[in-house]
Length: 451
Ligand SMILES: C[S@@+](CC[C@H](N)C(=O)[O-])C[C@H]1O[C@@H](n2cnc3c(N)ncnc32)[C@H](O)[C@@H]1O
Ligand code: SF4
Picture: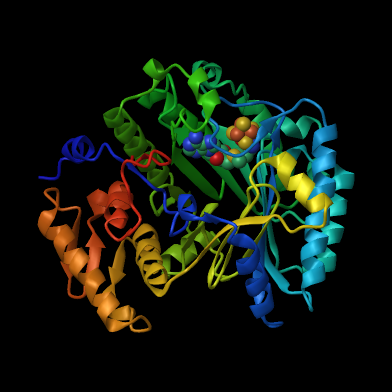
């Protein structure tokens, strides 16, 4: 019988989340500019692209936070940064000989919900100059509900918001104190209601399991309250505790953290509650109501995975703007300069801050495709890989066979020419995916635990 505790016991090693393959630690300094220039040069006028804008500021620092952000109570550094961000968009626009159509635009951070109306308009104007944005463009923004006291939902609507992603994490006051994130249910509810009244049809809520002082019961209460808000989508991420990378996570008392077995049990119970409430489980950590585009994409094998997690975005080009942002072209990844001050200095000099990058080899594309399908569909049919060299596909098939032979837990099985992750083993999809990762080094502590 399948014993998840035995799997967890055996797999205490950190595993990447595979929001890209190869993963960001593989990107090399000095590679970004050329990959970016080539990528822009290869764009065709009929091609639709996506863009990501990073806002590395928050007016509070949640101790669990793993994002690239900085705490500030003043707006001045934010408005200064936005001038550089606008300039970066202009610089990229100048490199383009036409305005590509924008399919999806995501503002993440940090807390883009801090942005004031004038600044949002300044960004939108720069984006309109560089890209063709129309009613079909999906525009999503990460929203910390506490920010909405100062900034307005109307400003976001004017910016073009079509999907709001709202951070909740956990509603229990003791958990909130342990992570330094006070946030009432009422504040969250009011923001959701206001956005709905203003016509926002798609709302996502982020919650976390594995937080300090979180019990199964507390997480279930949080999930129940989230369900009351009727989000179209929910993300239930496992808290990645990496204090060696994110120093402020040391403020969390590690003794308050649930152990691996409890994390697993909590995630399973929360997932069951969401499914019971009518949500479709998507990938390892997302949920969506059946009519939602994410659910439809998952059902039709059109789900994708990028730096924001699971997505319907199928455009091969993603242009990243802002400090630390990551973009992708057919032939490789590009990451902007990470420290915000250095990013600003480079943009001020008119330099595109495309620092790191990685050219995708054919073997990387193949492994990336296999890993993406395993993370999205929990299966990969090797017979669908005819666009890759046969000998490379054969090597991957061998890896699949070896994985099954050596895996004491029957996480996956071969069905014809398909490798399938068993339904009960889906929470362990990252472990299966890691077998196809040529760069995987478990001693690389950049990663978090598999569950
Ligand atoms: C940029 S943040 C959220 C936006 C907004 N600043 C907020 O907090 O509401 C995006 C999401 O990443 C998730 N996240 C942040 N730190 C994390 C960590 N250490 N482990 C797992 N998920 C994390 C949280 O669920 C968060 O809502
Ligand atoms: S979770 Fe959101 S609000 Fe909290 S520090 Fe991270 S980005 Fe900022």
